[in-house]
Length: 122
Image (tube, rainbow, N blue to C red; front, side, top):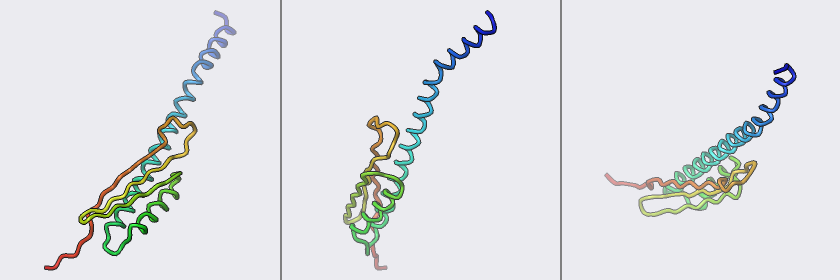
């Protein structure tokens, strides 16, 4: 095999490998963006649930805190739902992370429950 043929062979190999390498790089970036979105939604849900678990807090204030954290973290179409019961307070955050290609995996949903603050008399 001559020197020119070996160079041509290496070029063809790289030509065939480049799409796979680029696909792998974009897949890693997609997974990273989804993981970031899940972390942001988790932080927003935790903050909203902790705020809602306080005796002096209102659910509207807790939803506002959760929505602000979600939007500041880059979550789009963020929705925060807070529910307060007798012994528990919880929050659910849903949203969508911006990605290169939407393959149906850009939606994130996290639900957090915290015990409600209570006053006990000794």
